[in-house]
Amino acid sequence: MYEEIIDDLQRRLSSKRFAHTLGVARAAVALADRYGEDPEEAYLAGLLHDCAKEIPLSQMQELVDNSSLTIDVDMYVNGALLHGVSGAILANARYGVRSSYILDAIRYHTTGRVGMTTLDKIIFLADYIEETRDFPGVEVLRKIAFEDLDQGVLAGYDNTIHHLLDQGLSIYYKTILGRNDIIRRIK
Ligand code: DGI
Ligand code: FE
Ligand code: FE
Ligand code: FE
Image 1: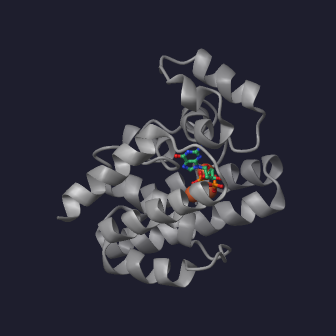
Image 2 (image 1 turned 120 degrees about the vertical axis):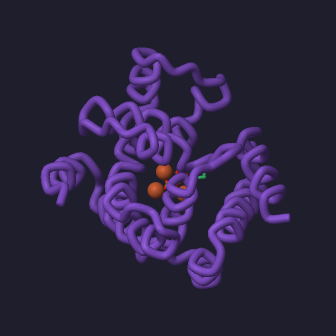
């Protein structure tokens, strides 16, 4: 399935990012099986989630400028945040994805959002737990991800926020709003 997309991604991504991409697609299928989502949609969203990750920030911004999307400035100036939005635009324009369910999962894979869909959560989590990831705590996160999807997403948020605090980086406000929303749903 999706051989043309896979070949194109292999040409456009570094080998490390390409391996990560295949890992996310596979992890997304496993999570889709566990949580009753369509495995093909999960696979495609996983394949394309980082398709814009390695283009220059100026090109990510150009994709946004030429789209109908409006983005707040905190996200617009930060490629770590903007590549999801730009990736969703590219998934549509270059790879022909028309499903807004899939495009949104790509768009929100880094920050999450208030009211995440099941596919949003699957891609958000697959990004952390895929087979090439080996940060401290990844095994625990893998276990939680297959026990309870919302608890997994919360653990993912907490991991990211810990990391940002440790590095002295800013925390995008919608990341906080997304985490608060998951906590509200768990209770
Ligand atoms: O693209 P990946 O490296 O596979 O993973 P990602 O899209 O989940 O995260 C990309 C980067 O974004 C990662 O280095 C951490 C950073 N990030 C995630 N949430 C926030 C953030 N950076 C800021 N400043 N604020 C956030 O809320
Ligand atoms: Fe990403
Ligand atoms: Fe990723
Ligand atoms: Fe991530």
